Length: 217
Ligand SMILES: CC(C)(COP(=O)(O)OP(=O)(O)OC[C@H]1O[C@@H](n2cnc3c(N)ncnc32)[C@H](O)[C@@H]1OP(=O)(O)O)[C@@H](O)C(=O)NCCC(=O)NCCS
Image (tube, rainbow, N blue to C red):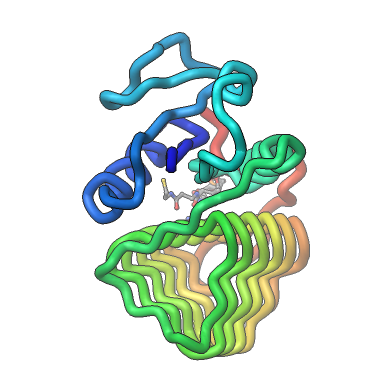
């Protein structure tokens, strides 16, 4: 089976490390798919644009990981591969604790040191970076990124396409809406409306996520 990592930048390389170091037996080969690079080799692996990739490989011999930090781009790329019949892998670092009563969706990547507690749900194509803690009964909807060291509280809900910055702390029972951005280090004590960008302690909204982009560089 081939692991296709869609995106060859920092996150793609982190996913590559995870797969090579902990799932070497599972993958015959790792290939980067990247429409924006001219390089044919990245991080020691063959790299090609998606239109080239899909002519070369059958869906049955491939599993994808969409390695993108921007939730909206993740959705766009996932819908692109899905239309052509490709499926995603789910990769979980062995040094994590995942409750057997939790539900982990397709295309999810969970990095080192994370904890996913009882009856939590991690939607499709979410990424949990290192040492993030998902409390009991938390629901994370599709295409979210929770950066390193995020702490959620029991029964929190994070809406689809939301981005939670590193070290953010979300009080129990909070709903963060769809397409929100929570700044790094924010302490979220009240619900966050759809598309709001919040930061600080206590977190306050300071603009709306009209661009659909977290990073502006
Ligand atoms: C919230 C965030 C998306 C805002 O980015 P932005 O839209 O470019 O906003 P700016 O940097 O222009 O900041 C706007 C204002 O909010 C403040 N601000 C931004 N992020 C903040 C944060 N995390 N905490 C407190 N204040 C913050 C800035 O100081 C600035 O205040 P000012 O207008 O008084 O000068 C960004 O700061 C952030 O936290 N991104 C997540 C980063 C992360 O977690 N990376 C880890 C993975 S790589």
